[in-house]
Length: 335
Image 1 (tube, rainbow, N blue to C red):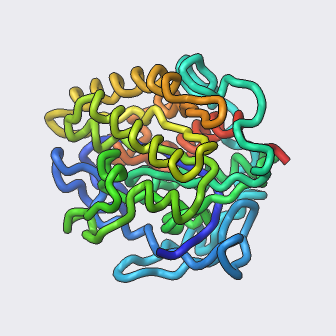
Image 2: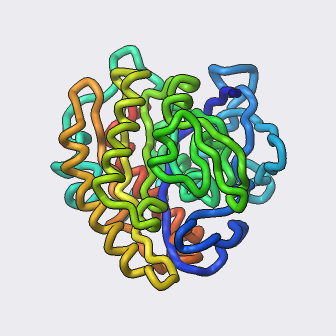
C-alpha cells in the first residue's frame, strides 16, 4: 500500500442522467459511479517521500495505477489553494441546527480538538463517488481553507484528486459505510472491480488526526435501515480510535439526493431520516479526547445543482466545498 499526503475534504447529489465524465448509474439497486477513473495510486507526498507540494496542504505529483487514469485538472494544471477562489466559500455557508456547530455536534466545544503535539493535522477523506469522483468539491474546500488562513494541514490517502485540486483521499465510488467496515472490500465489475482497503487499514497506513466521513448516499439509496447505517458509522469510529485514541471524526449529514428513478422520493425521505438522526448519534459517541463533529451538507444543498439527482454539478460541488469549509473552520488550526 503506497503512502501519500495532501489537504482536506467533500459531499453528494442525485437524478438519473449521466454526470459529465462520470459514467452511467448501474441501477437503482446498485447506485454510484461505475469505473471511478479519477482514483489513482499516489506517489510519496510531504512527510512520505520526496514529492514537493503544489500548495499548502497538497501533495506531490501522482502516478496512475493499472487501468486508472489521472485527471489533468482545471486548464491542465493543479489548483493552487492560495489563489483559487479566495474566500469564495466562506459566505453563505452557515450551518443549520444540528449541523457543524449545532447542539448535536462536538464542534460547539471550545478549544482545539487536537492534542498539543498535533500542529499540522493529517486529514483522511472516507467516502463514495461524491468524494472520490466526480468529487470536485475537494478543490473548492481546499481553496476556501487556504484563502481564509488555513494552510497547516495535509490531506492523506491512497488516491489522488480527480479534479486537479491536489487533494489526496481514501474514497472509492460505489461504496457504502458497510464496505469500509470490512478489512477490505471488492467492487462490482461495473464499478471498475478491484479490491480496496477498509477504514482500519487506511487509518493504520496514513495515521490521520482528522477523518472526514462522507458515506450514506448509497446506503439510503439501497434501502438500508437508518439503524444499520448508524451502526456502521459507529464501527468506523471505533476502528479509527483503535489506531488513534485522539482522532477527530467529522461525519457528514449527506447532501439532499433525489434519484431519478421510481424510488426517488422514498430515497429522499430515507436520506432526511438519516441526517436527522446523525446529531444525536454524534453527541452520544463524542468524547473530550476524540470529538465527533457534525458537518451539515444537507441544509445548504440543492438537488437542482446535480447532474443526475445525486452527483453535483460544478455549482453543487462549490456549494459542498463551502459546507465542508464551514464545519472544518471550527476545528482546524488557523495560521
